[in-house]
Image (cartoon, one colour):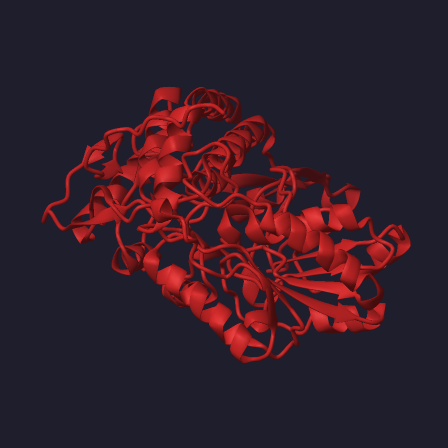
Length: 497
């Protein structure tokens, strides 16, 4: 087994404004903790109104330079940033693991890699962004119009704590490709890698001010979402937070993209390849300790396949290794905070109290080496009903609920009986049924015979209370740019006066 990586000495985390660290005016701050030990990692300075105003002003100055560059030049910078990010994978993965508690193997193979893919993809798109020309013909004196695709201006990105550097890239890359500037606020629980991304952008040649970072809690976020000179806000977070952000943005009619929570269904029909279906259920519930918004935590299994599915699922879950996130052999790391761990344990107790049968897990591990961290063993509940708290509430932890169904119509109706609509999955060998089912599922992102794969080329987002707008793919360009229509008269003005 490879040695675990050595831990870095972390410096005080300050805002990054105008291409450099920016000290807080009043010195307020907080300690960020390692979820695996609950020991402090470093001090983080809170950005108040002076720092936010400085960040917006720097972004406006950066926007003036960046938006004047051609798409090819902007793309070159983003692709260079992707190269630097990949070269620093080891360093950034260690920081991500310290910050989030997720296994180092995940941080290396997914978090940093997917962020680099995002930068490279939008670097390639930057030179292709354009409007269109339409000739109106002889009836209009051969007049014509054309459209210009223009940036919005200064955008705000507000990140979540489960995928800090990936989410920062998902928001920054399309914004920058379109010529915008960004002020990014990482989640207060995971502040470490956003500034590193800012350093990467600077090294890649991004003009100072085009990407800024401010730290803080809800107060800092509100300074951004209510700021009159910010044109757009993109949030990844909880539904309640998304509603508040949307209300704030309404004050100046900001554009919004909201990628919010979910309680997504995973439908397993009896004819499915059960080994693959179990693999998907594990990935859809226990990857990143279950702290993924799109997770398929309601696993609906056709009644005739239930016993075989559960036998495979429980055996493989019990074989998973929970341990030190820095150990490359670890499968399940630590939940983000002690408060969140206790919330997850509370849901597990609620599941028992409501009559669900706990087949395995759902406990604090007895390993003394893990005693100070926020660890919970992966839990599987059987005998669940749709009205149980563990079935209808988003838990955001390693808790899987198994439900059974008798017919396709029943499965679809129950899957859709939720205020959420972020994701859904279907496992079956009958592809006609698979396509029929996903057409009826009320979810913005669906998978057939797999789950939670999000290639950067594929738009990602939800319906109902799971969000507004899309991230990734060409669809994101529509959310970070605006069209200007220009009519060109080729004849005389027709006027009856």
